[in-house]
Amino acid sequence: MHPMLTIAVKAARRAGHIISRASLDLSQLTVSTKQQSDYVTEVDKAAEAAILEVIREAYPSHAILAEESGSLGPQSDYLWIIDPLDGTTNFIHGLPQYAISIGLAHKGVLTQAVVYDTNRNELFTATKGGGAFLNEKRLRVSKRARLAEALIGTGFPYRSFKHIDAYLAIFRELTQKTSGLRRPGAASLDLAYVAAGRLDGFWEFGLSPWDMAAGALLITEAGGLVGDLTGEADYMSGGNIVAGSPKIFAQLLRVLAPHLGDELK
Ligand code: IPD
Ligand code: CA
Ligand code: CA
Image 1 (cartoon, rainbow, N blue to C red):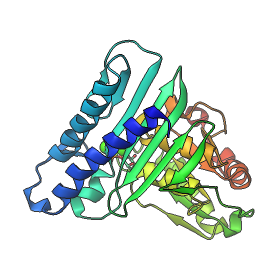
Image 2: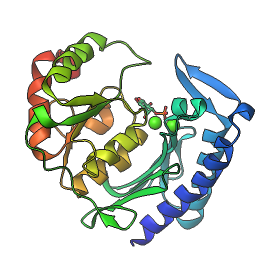
Image 3: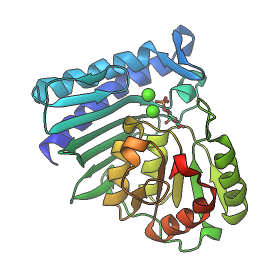
Image 4: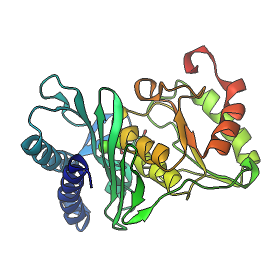
């Protein structure tokens, strides 16, 4: 395993212990609201602190972008992109679909990825050029060729409703043109599931870099494609993402195209 991936896995497991322990008694949880429908708990913060400690000890000269702390560290070609608890709303409700997501970019290119689902003990990892894995098993995106047979993941808008009409128009069409849509509630895991072939594709508007970084590398290393809503590479800064196996990715883009106003292109 690449030494930087080893550190990412160590950090994810530390955070995993904190999250698993806290999940045993959710009545103790203090929940605060960052903005409408956007929650944070002391568990998100403690998990992030544990991740930062491991990474900073190993790589003090690297930069960090973490959901709860923002940008940290010196200027560096290396940037760790961290979501200590992706799926906080599920976590608060005791709905066991959440994960820790840690990605590393070097000069803007994603090179290492970990998405760790503590509930199922599923550790998704990838190194650029080295493939994607679920625990020990090599991952490939699904082989399904037709959108009509595809199971597609998404995230419903719940914080910003700026693009709700476009979203619902796409939803209306895809719910009729696919074999089903799913909204599990943790984007990093949704992307990991595309890498694993459990979902054939995925789209969501308004994500943050820490929701996507690790999952995106998992998908490309599993033979899939990731892009913005027009299929370009700009998803990390824009936050609008489409992903899938190459065949399903192309068909998703064709469905989306007529529904995109200028601000979504
Ligand atoms: C959220 C989850 C969710 C997605 C949201 C994210 P958080 O992350 O990934 O699936 O729909 O857009 O913000 O807030 O639980 O880390
Ligand atoms: Ca998140
Ligand atoms: Ca989070």
